[in-house]
Length: 385
Image (cartoon, rainbow, N blue to C red; front, side, top):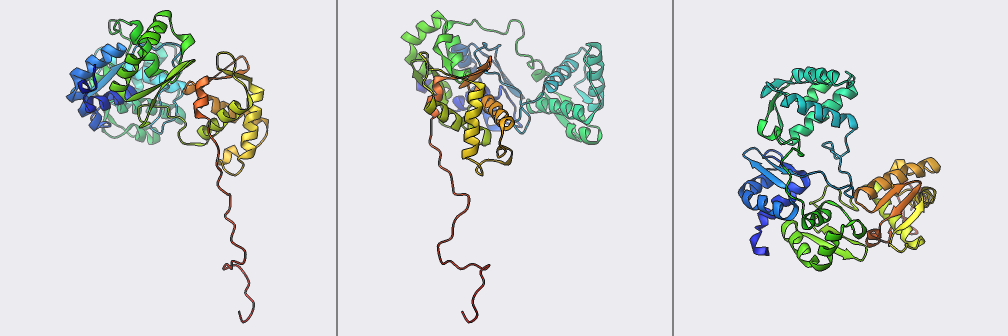
């Protein structure tokens, strides 16, 4: 495989499929068009490198990923605003999908009929559902996710309006897309070779740990690493950074991942400072990791909050043990999602790759002081001046 064999549009479509898994012309018009245009190449490339199947139809494109290994960070479904959904939303996505897949289900239906069917199916399965506003919002979030994937179209009215005042909405189902809602269907998986599993670790895992590799993967990484790196670069534009403890693939454009790091927001800023403080205060062990207790980690968080008082958002301004533990939980959620930390048995483990993010902190002055002698509108002037 050479650079010339992969069209730039095919690479952009591959990056979009890897990030979203579902593309449709409404939400991803450019990427979907590229996927349609280069469908043959995309099916071949994903199959050869990762062992993934790609389905491209007139109304959607779907990347079918099998279950990833335990070493891969968990990836939750998210709301339109980017927040992880609740367990009940997962439940509703499954129930709505089952209701739409049932024999005899119509291609168009009212949202009230869908709600009734979901509640009936839930009761049959022994699942408790309610009619509170919170329940309705979670149901609407599930429907909205399916709308975002192109499985459902809001033909007349919206699910959000139903949540607010139970206004009726007409929904249209894309049967072709619905058929691929469930990924791990029998017969869909390609053979998983060591080369493919190694490539998956680099593409799917934010950090690849060498101790996690099988013997066959270790052999390929040792003897044929350059080829693996080249193929990942050609297909996704990802740069592989290798160290003794493992490797990570990073993206110059920062748009091929659903978990950018450091990224924006107070939790990510504090996470970056936390990494720096740990690296400065603790020596890594033989395997390059740094292990500290949760109490010690909370103490470091407390120092960071104190030193940055007035520079972070309001809920990070409070002090005390409860605040430190709450912020530590947020920091660990960020670092765990990108494979830079883990927490178990009262300890926090920082991955060696975190060292690449060590940085210095520059704080802006809270208030700009006026030069001596400056007169403002609020100063009393002497008479005759």
